[in-house]
Length: 187
Image (cartoon, rainbow, N blue to C red; front, side, top):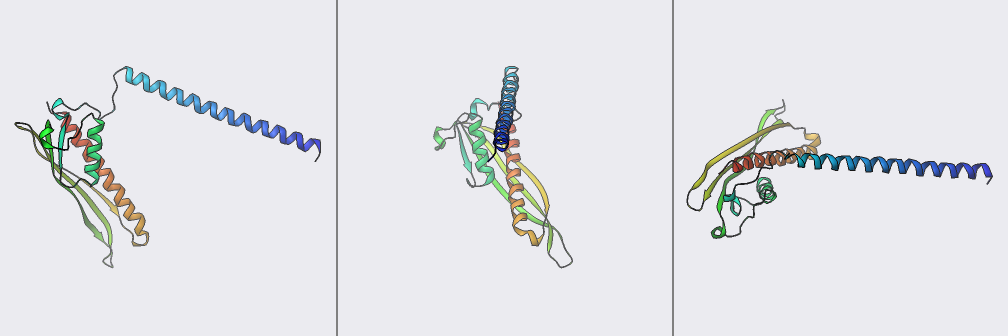
């Protein structure tokens, strides 16, 4: 090994270290800037959409869910907890009851090919809920429904099934956001 190649390696490794250091420095500055922006926004009273506080009557709700394992049910319970509610396991300890009577996903064929193979589907997610206080009805039964369509190709079956799952999860999140807005409007 000659001196020139050793010197090149040394200069190269020093250059690589300087590039890495500069990259870390830029990353650190970006993080500091993002934190500064977040602090400035919270200082002025800014809140994310959908993060309104729940009314006091929903501080300790009892959730009566048709099926606690659906996308809507899991996301709804999660968002209630994020909003400061403490869901109760027993109805007697609750300040109100949120009754989800319908939580249904329906898939409908929109179009078929010349060989009578489905080429497009529509997913419809429907939720019905009501809120009952300890002595009166706080919110009459509300039905919310969202629909989305997607194309279908038999040769990419797994991808299309995954797409349908993603659409269903997104519709559940959207339905929960609508439900939470309606709950925050209660007084």
